[in-house]
Length: 133
View 1 (cartoon, rainbow, N blue to C red):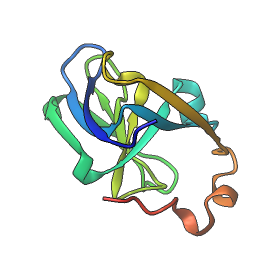
View 2 (cartoon, rainbow, N blue to C red):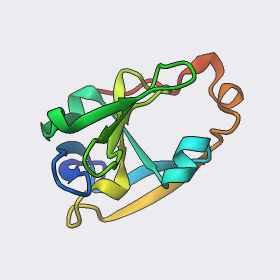
View 3 (cartoon, rainbow, N blue to C red):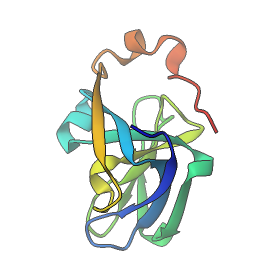
């Protein structure tokens, strides 16, 4: 398994929101069981802001915030898909939904389960690990 970084493209269902993210071909993602992620089937690929680029659709994005209002859940106002957002655990980066990445660049995924139902206990200090640039 290589840690070499490549560009992956992705977006929402209708295509208005498009982005690219730089990450390995074999992705390490998290599956959270919180009320939001479990309902949407979100697979978190956490990246620093420097490795994410919105290509189109900024004008199509709507935002949803709840609880501490730290996370910024962006979704396409046309099709409703949340393909990326700013997570509470890593407010200096992005969480990209690996299920919203285009086919062709991903060689595999390792999925790690996250206890989001008990977020405060599983994230001491209110944040996740520091992101590497």
